[in-house]
Length: 506
Image 1 (cartoon, rainbow, N blue to C red):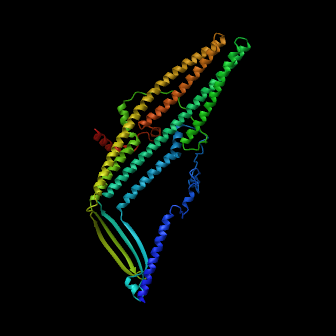
Image 2 (image 1 turned 90 degrees about the vertical axis):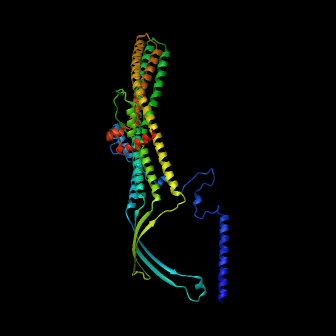
Image 3 (image 1 turned 120 degrees about the vertical axis):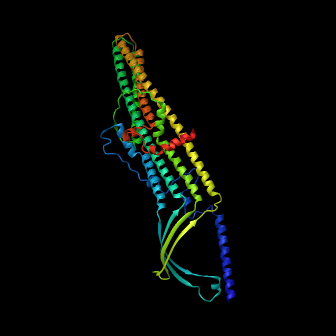
């Protein structure tokens, strides 16, 4: 009887195994056509079909249009626009959250210096089945086991691995923080450029309006002289043609102002349709005094947050070398536990344990050697990246300074151009009124005057943009001057590292 029972069980196991194997083979054969979870239903039916998700991404993202209550009720200065941009532009929010994340990472690593305490509770109902129990007529033993315990673990010594990790994440925090500073400068520069662009389009609009008024005066003058029989009809037509061209330029100038307004409010982090009014800037630009280029390069190397972030990355990689070397040291930990165990739901039997663990890595398949080598090469790569970025900043300073000097000279040339064109237009108008000039000379003089005024507008715009880019290139961005009044905080912390990098290059 027992032999027949064992044979029946073996036959059952054999049949079950065969069925499972057949099901596995069938499922593999039809795996491509199966979609048990329905995820493939989101795929378009053909390459030409449009993807349509179950829910649109924008429905899952909270958006807020934060508009200061008085922004449309007052005239905004450049400082106001920059301040609003730094508060509301999503780019500054993103980099700020990155700093918060990096700071939390520092706390995460520093927490490894504290002990860990765990509580566990286990309830088990078990039945032991062995080959002997299958052959026995007695049922297998069944019982309950309840355990509750507290456990304490503390790492006493790890060869400096924790200290290296903390130093590394602190350097990463510095790097992310300086990247945030760079983001602030970029947003401030973008707002500055948009602000000056709007001013330039408004200046151009004023020139276009003045040109239209002058051309209207020329049309009236030509019509009056034609009515008096002093000039032919062609003078009236030429004056009207010039006036129509001035009207077309006015339409374009108005559209440029509208686009520039949207660009500015977008740079400030506001909805593009938000109306704003901005303040004028002085028309008198003072020529930039010549400065020592070496001093400018040193100032840029000291203040540019991008370089400070790159130097912090070098510090982080150096900490990685120490962390990799700590793998050669043994690890010593202390642990203690106390709890209760019993077959009853409320266990009564106490149990405790206290111990010290020692882990000495003898052979790791050369893993540690390669970890140290990788950490050293990563550090050298970070140094090279820093030097590459430093050279790029130096070129940026050189170029920005040259363009500022060029803008200074262009302002003076444009002023001379306007003065000459204005005098020429005045003389041509007087000659035409006196009958000694012709309409073509008058139109040409007016065109030259409009061109000269637009050149002056572009020269003023280029000067303000060049000054903003120059100050940003050497770390003297508008936000640094307006808010902090100096260089970025924390630059002295890595001054020694910068000197070390330069010394190694030499």
